Image (cartoon, rainbow, N blue to C red):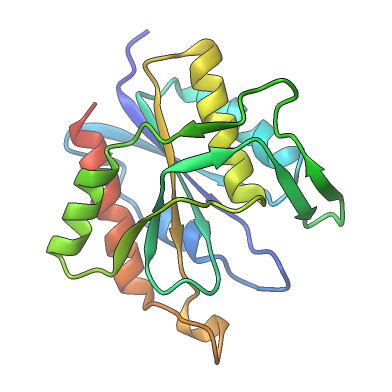
Amino acid sequence: MPHDCILVTGFEPFGGQTVNPSWLCVSALPDTLAGVRVERRLLPVDWRGGPAALLDALRETAPAAVLCVGQAGGRAELSLERVAVNLRAGADNAGVAQDEQPVAAGGPAAYFSTLPCAEMLAALRAQAIPAACSYSAGVYLCNCVMYTALHFAAAERPALRAGFLHVPFLPEQTQTAPSMARETMARGVLLCAEVLARHV
């Protein structure tokens, strides 16, 4: 079947927050970019439900590419993640804790993003949006869904491009940690999605 769309995902709030900027940015994306349909999905912060919802969306929409977006409180810039590791740790929104368990038993230790990260970074910097490539997506749900998408691609759909973008806190989420205005990060997510759509 033709892969004529891109899938972009965000997360629900977690860690006692009432908002997650990743979903605010993703839900604001238009229905089409560069003539390519944009599918948007909200993922639960749940060790079982998050990856399952992503896999359901990948099979339902059969996209050419998937960009997962999540919150990284404490970072001051948009972070294009280059590596996902086969490790998960921490407690999810249901209180279920993982203690350095693998994302996929028997899977590779890590996967590299297959998104056009250099082009995305250049587009962000051209618009003066603080951004960088990151080499650690952590071991929480963000890393988990990035690994899940890349593992799915390796096993079932090698042509699928997949990766992850972290966004900072919104100013209203913190008084001490770095943050970014909603309009700035939304424009950044849009720019990354536009770059991805042009590759479809």
